[in-house]
Image 1 (tube, rainbow, N blue to C red):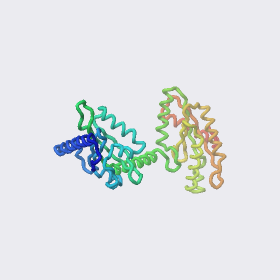
Image 2: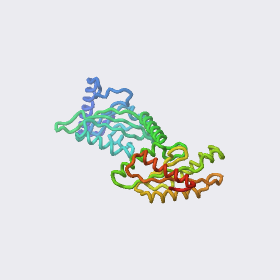
Image 3: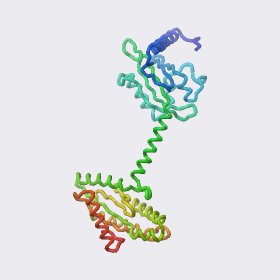
Image 4: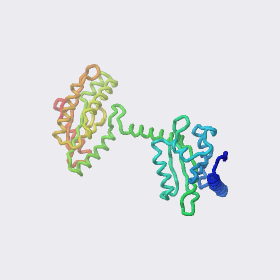
Length: 324
């Protein structure tokens, strides 16, 4: 660095700054653990002289961002790096530093995204601590270490995405893309407990596609599968905000209506039945549903479903395409 043109005060401050840095480097040489951060595969250490606001760092910290060392100013300030933080990570990073400087956190430790020369972002894990203070205990110097954790973050995000897919697969019927049997049972148990505790009505409806075996036999299973998909979509579109419909099994569906009495449940079920009966399915075929409605009182989940099923069988015995 060319010191020509520096004032006497600036030169003295620069000397003190270099003394603080030299002191820190000597301390590291004596410490086998190097600031207790003896980890491999990192981007090196950094040192922040708070009084002069200058940062000394390993070249890997900036070359990992795509910069050539000739592009880095001779004097690098703290803001050189913070100005490159992702907008969503800026506040949390600043707060982590302030908490450490104010003595509210033992170390400065944070993960953040930092902008590369090309404009995309890398993930860094940054950890440091105050290593020198003045006579009044005010922080003078921080030292730390930084890691590029982009690869680990990307792997983690991929795993999280896979977990979401698996979670969806475990709760959604693969054919109809609405809730599956497991989802229905979990939701029904929850709504039953809520209805019992708050003394609110709860009604369920068991729907069954009429003569579905004949549809499969005459048209084939591919056609039958498409009928189930269309029925599922019609049911889904008929649900209110708190309602849930799912495929109970085979050609049978269950709808759960919280805060709904038996009388209102029958009205909703009848409206759904009519919607399906009037719908033009593939090849112009007409399909009908039968429905069994039952309001929850204090019975078990098995007894509740059995009661609704009995109503469904009654609808079948009474001619199908009806709600009981």
